[in-house]
Length: 474
Image 1 (cartoon, rainbow, N blue to C red):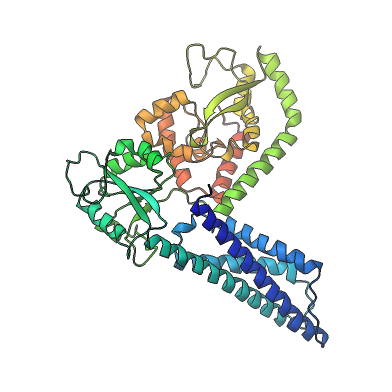
Image 2: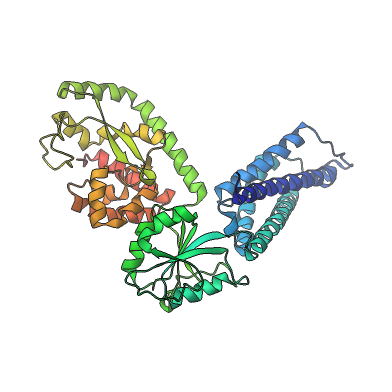
């Protein structure tokens, strides 16, 4: 059965396509009646030729792709109408300028001022129609939310006066943000009381959140814990790390004064949303395109090197040329990582071990391959098939992850993104020889995740290339 959210998203996209189609048809008529008639000195008839019908299909498709890359179709039930106007305005400006250079620059005009009029008319038609239907759809969704017909199953963490006050406000039809409370869980060391029991069921303690989220199809978790209790907030956040839920924190006066709280709607309750996904949709698409393009280029250009390295590995020691090992990737999914073999066979007969300086298990050829990181080249295949990225935290084995999590539970944050051939942790810290060094390197990888962008990826790749050229690998 198709969910209501998917139906609304499909309707949202359809209205965008209709708006773009109507806008282009009206602009087509404007060009014939005014621009071309002014140029040639007589009335040009409007003929709906093949090019018109082709554009009527391609132009709406162009706008839908552009809006998708800008993230306009992500979770439409949470849209703010004010933000929607500003975001649509920005994308419309960029889209119209691009469309002008693609389709309209060769138009026959009487003067260059006609070009300016064309841009303004096209922008006014496209933006005006698009924002009209979008605001209409967003208003209908808001009405449904206030009537309780749409919403997000929510659990509140913390049974105290603070969470009780916020719950009351969010349950009020006039100030609701769409939260449908399925119950609450108690915070750490909270004494049993009945303050929230009058509003919603008691679901136990926060340690059971993953099971409760699955059982009740929860989409949002509100932390009614004092924001100054960082350790407890981190503990709950780590529990929720691999859960696909929106996490919000009830702010205190310090949070308000420090400017951490941003108003998304005038009437709604002020909450801090913990948002780790700062990379825009268009950058995610570009990142994947770069992954594919660079991987194909490297695998093709270095294919002769594969034969030479394969021969050297075979001569250097007995065993297979390639080495594969199970690593943990995006969302905890295991995959096989590929490398040129640099160690002797049965190098881990006594259990998993990390390589160390002057490691006797590494072959002579292997030392040279590691120095220039040539052993990592087969991983471009992992990147090509989507298991890895060029830049991202280095993937680890479950054996070591289990040890790291005992010391640093926030390691789970790394599983939010694809692992990479190179990483900020790799550039800043280098290879880790033990679990403690892995934990030390972890802070650089988390810093990367919280600041991900194409620009940061390029910086890391440049530093990696310098490391390879200088032979500083190990």
